[in-house]
Length: 387
Image (cartoon, rainbow, N blue to C red; front, side, top):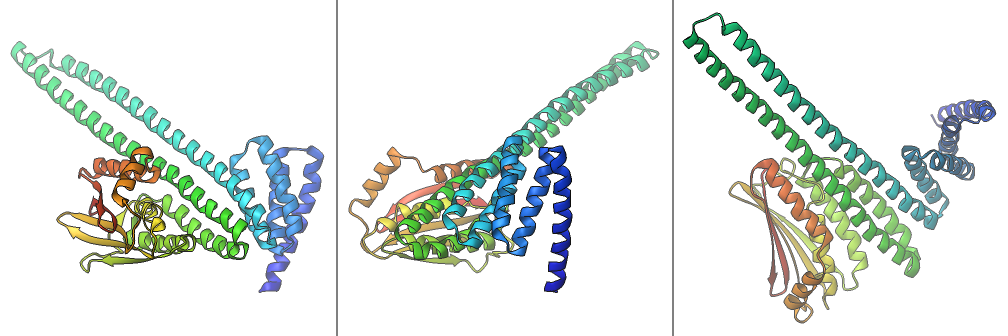
């Protein structure tokens, strides 16, 4: 099987090299880019990382000239894998930063185009409905002119009322559909804002390990890569299961335990009447809350900290509590936490509030988030409807 795979790669390599010779005669950037990127991928698959690096960089340079964000994104992804395979982790990290910028540009551009397209379609449908209703009204008036005056008046009034009600109903339905689509796009935009915040914090940890503890940096980078892939996949979905959210949180908390000097333990307490594979919630909803519990709670403790996540039913809602505590919390914990909150708003927590507000509109049920100090730390409580 390995021989057959290498044989196919050899055939593909020969074809791409011949194509490159022909395309170089015409010097078309788009065609050359196809050859450069294809050759880079083939050499990477063959394990020839130096030649893969050469052609991938050529493709990247041409993509930058052409302003092709999609090709730039793909080139950065392969360069990250290629440098990681060669052990050039610092270079791979640099490419990862650039790839995140390009991916965010693609993501924001796509969202902007979708919102604009939705608005244009809504305006067009509304105008078309008004024109159609006006024409129907004129037709109705023309048909009843041959009847008696009393019948004409009654028919016109009845027809006008029915048409007006139909028009209002149509516009209301279109408005509701439009509002729902905009609500989803706004929610997606909030998730795209949260990803760079999450990635930046993780990159800061990687940079710290590379400078202070390089032997752990490779292990941390590998775990971060798995978590990052899961985060990016989940962020593309409107909802994920509680099971998937908990699995992602455990990976995240295991990474953060490596960074906290005094360390901490964590525990998930799920009520028996909750089906974690059936209950769904917006992705990355709990991560900013857990992040605050770590860096504004147990990380400042003078002893081993503890984070408990509790999930239980409360009437038609699901109540999720995230509590951090320690046996020796810093002095004046409540006052310092309140003072810090007054000076600096948590970016992640603010996005959580906005996402819960959008969820309230979408499900027509009030969502809630509360943060309350406890004798040994802080407790955050979230109420969301069962989805």
